[in-house]
Length: 357
Image (cartoon, rainbow, N blue to C red; front, side, top):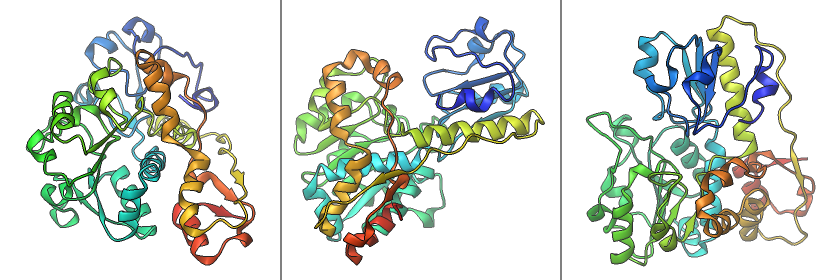
């Protein structure tokens, strides 16, 4: 968890443990528990605790029994939106590796977004700034805000960003059926950077058999870390659940939990560590506007690297995440030679949140 010692050592001693194997006896003396999505927070874990705060450095919280925490009167916080920019950068990298679909979007086609929370809205905003239309589906938000699922499925690119829930009346587990996905347009692109359980593995394998023209891009998988090798083989790109793994997003999540913990513990917030510095870049001379988007995205992320790493070692799914390289966000970039770019190119920088000197 990035920056956890820098922030939380201000509140006490920090002990680090493996997330998937964390056991209740390791929490015996803990006042604060901080986790990520690989750690189920439930009655079996908490045991005979003395916890005064639990935080998850994640946008989602399907791994946390919040009803139990409420009954135990343990304050809980997570970090919604902390990794939104990182996930959007991931989607943009995928699009840059599919120039036909990207050109269609820039030419007027719409991208379909399933899930209209922090990440879905962030993606829609960034796309709109690039001049790309979108439609979204999320039955948990106001009807006037989103479109129908059928409308979204008509789009040449569909990107999933829904939270995983079993709550009625709109549970999202296995929310998309084979019949619904077969209605995707020819050569469509289906991206899941949310939760693997949104679509059953068997459904995706059947979709690949019946509609091999559809490009599957999966960052999230059922039964992680024991992912389906058969499914990985038919994916256009497969990555080890790292879409939101930018260094900026990780630090942002830890900062959010630190402030929430201080509030829950009635502790004054200390001076916080400085944010990560900007990443200085210089655009090549003569770069045209239509070349700038993939060039800028490539400065921070290339989905092909993580795809290659997972295909080489699918059994090392967790290790690939734990030892993940430092990756920055587009919003961290600072362009040192903007005078070389024309107005059209500079507008792309603005749309992506790239700072200019």
